[in-house]
Length: 370
Image (tube, rainbow, N blue to C red):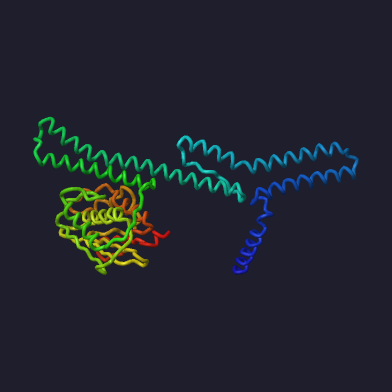
C-alpha cells in the first residue's frame, strides 16, 4: 500500500512538472494569460446572460468592467508583492541592515528572483561580517605590539630602565612583529585584488628547497624569513627529502618561496623541543607538477579544526603553540593558500600518524597551458 502511494506521488509530481507552463503560479506569463482568459470568459458569460434575459447590455458591460478591474487588481497585487518587499529590504541594506530577507513562497519568476535576492543579501551579510571581523582582528593584532613597544619606550623615557641592548631587543622584537603584520596584510590585499602576477618558470627542486631551508636556519633568532614571520626556535631540526634528486617543477619561484617559508615557519612554531620538521618533494601527476609536504612532530590538528587552518588570523589555539612561540599573526597559512590558488593548485591538511602534515599540489605545465 505504501509503495503504491509513493508511486502515485511520483507520477503526480511528474505530471505536475510537465504542466508547469500551464500553472499560473509557476509563470508570470501564464498568470497574465489566465487573467486575460478569465476576463474574456466573464465578459462572454455576462453578454450571454444579457442576450437571454431582460438585462440591458450597458448594465452587463458595467458589471464586466468592474469584475475585470477587480480581478486585474487582485492578480497585480499578487504579482508585485515581492517587488515591494524587495524595495523595503533594499532600503534596509542601504542603511547597513543585511539581516532582512524577502518572504516569498511563489513558484514563478518572481519567486526565483526573491530566492536570488535572498542569496545576494546573505552574501553581502557575510562580506560585511568578514569586514568587521577583519577590522577587529587587525586592531587587536596591532594593539598588542604597540602597547608593548609603548611600555618599553615609556620605561626608558621615565628612567625606570636603561636603554641597554636587552631593552632595545625587546623593542625591536615588537617593531618586527608590527612589520610582519603590515607585510602580511599588504600581501593579502594584493592577492585579494588580483594584482599579484604569476611568473612561472622551470627550476630544479633540490637546490631551490635547499636554499629555502638554509634561509630558515639563518633566520632563526635573526632576520625575517622572506614572506613569513621570524621565530627563535633553535632546537628544531630541518630535513629535506626530494625524490628523485633531479626533480624539476614549473611554478612561480617567489610565490612558492612564500608558501614553503610560511609552512616551515608554522611547523617550527608548533614543534616540540628538539623536534624535527621534514620537507618532502615528489613528482606530481602532470608534467612538471610538484607535490610538497611539510611535516612536524607537534600535537597535530584535530579533524574538526582542519577546515579553519587556512583562515585569516586563525592561530590554532594556545594549546597548539610550540615552546617559545608567540603564536604569530595568523596570516601565514592564509597567504600560503592564496599563493597556491594562484597556481591553480591545492593545499590542505593530510592524514598523519604523528604531528601535522600539510600537503601542497601544484599542477605544473597544465596550469600554464590553461
